[in-house]
Length: 86
Image (cartoon, rainbow, N blue to C red):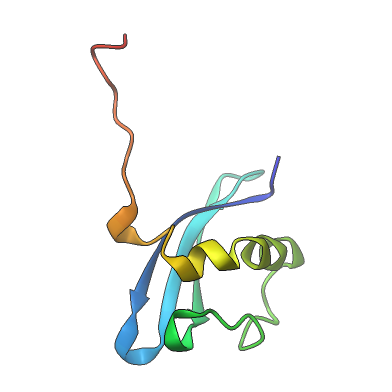
């Protein structure tokens, strides 16, 4: 199992930053990371030295999806209990 899971991202276009929200799966702790993102392309070399190596690895692996908007809050859909299925 991947040690970190990204839930969603929201962008602050005027400031060239975005927030990544997710969970550290082993301890079930939520996290939020502020990343520099000029021109909607995250730069993992700026102010990321304090992040855990496993989290940086996940961010590097998911960089293309983050940049393309896959995790954007506008795309996020929650899953709720479906009475028809239960």
